[in-house]
Length: 337
Image 1 (cartoon, rainbow, N blue to C red):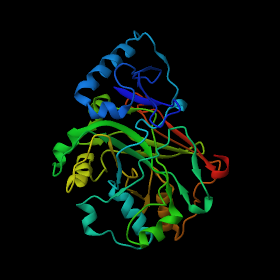
Image 2: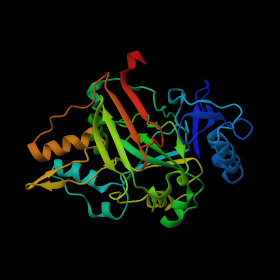
Image 3: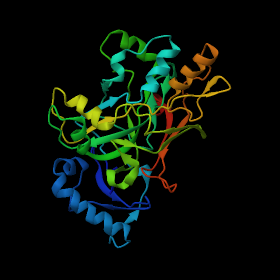
């Protein structure tokens, strides 16, 4: 099934069930008003939502209405935890190669993760508000999952079974603030503003055979200012699958229902053409494009995002249908927000 949260003036919005083709929706009133309620009592409430979803897809729901992504908050507007990984080791290799830095051996066996702000997510069509272009505004196209309860020391194979919902993310980064923060040795804070998520979150069964081994085997599309810059394959080159990412968190603590775990920037390796590396799949963040330019030309030439820039992130199914709806955002200054 597909779930979204509509804006209603409150912090947590109103839960709606969305049809498979994203054309219609229906309030989940009488079952649950908020997504967190469903996550807390999944085995009891999810089947009731599935029944409504079936009725909606059959065109028999009594109070269905046209679905409007612009009315959406993040599917889970605030979460108990937002932990983002760097599951695509190629992304790490590229960024480090650009600054002549080796990737530590542990990065290939143990996921790198950071804990982001989960108290103030933004909707798929909400603007990205930033105080200054000088911060180095960058989009990051990612996949994220929402978990059920996962006990401490759960294995990766068992942890993947805890995935309740899957969605897309724009994990905005402020690149020019990152070096100083990482230099302090405590990781990201100011350099990671509010994250945006796709209009709908979907249950794994909606992806069919493209959800395999804790990975989504489909193409993640990034369109910057109307130009498609990324068509990255999300499955094959995901070094750590979502079960491994969740298990990494669970090594020393429980993960509770409603935790969101991100994949990190979806990234694909280069191919050799006439003795030179090329990246035909493009990129899912500007930092990666700048790293490629540095490797090829000795310095980056692509600038970070400016006020007025737009970013669209979307993933389509095998028949060309939009699975999660699109994240469509504009970069705006704080003064206009």
